[in-house]
Length: 261
Image (cartoon, rainbow, N blue to C red; front, side, top):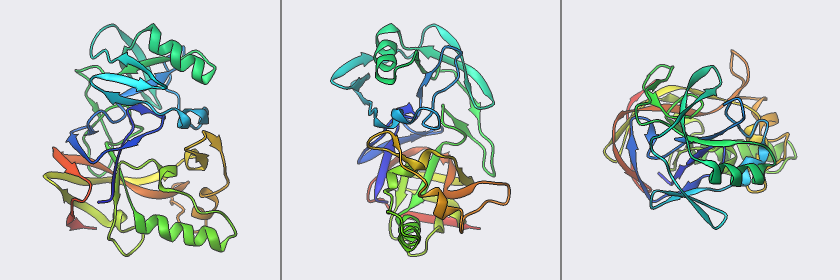
């Protein structure tokens, strides 16, 4: 395994870690916070690509961004929130951090965190729990899949894209065949076990430059559409997984596949 990436605020930039605890909902602290509008609806790069350039991190139980630090409120007043078709609640993180993100994005937003008693159940071949992620606990991608895609992009006269366009949590190295992750049904990494939930159908977010927060399409979606079309619509790239045994994983851990499709 070559990289582990945590996205503390859904839709904002992530950061790599050398090792991470893995809970039932995925990497610890991953997408357990999110920005919502005045109606409680989550913000994403689909409509607000500028979020990609915001890079919050968690340091000593505080959210750090842009040289400022805001304490994380683990429990407190609840507000209604919406993620796609899911309706739930969030712990409001207060006025100061809301003002920071509102100023950064030029719109009125609030920051919320998952309540400690949240139990949001996922869908897919393997079900489980999740925080504020779109649908599942982890997104797994391999370097060979990206290499194969970029070869095709270059053949089409486009510019290759980096892995961060796809916002994975777990990046696997050493698999020679592109899209090997599609065939994994159960895997052990460190003392953690993962199980396949579904293929990841991509939206427009991979066309957003994750460094600048600017849309930079049509790649990679244009090229993916030539060979990765999903029968139900859209294009796929990566595997969504659920956690079936918690523990800790680290960069450099071997990925032992226990069951193939």
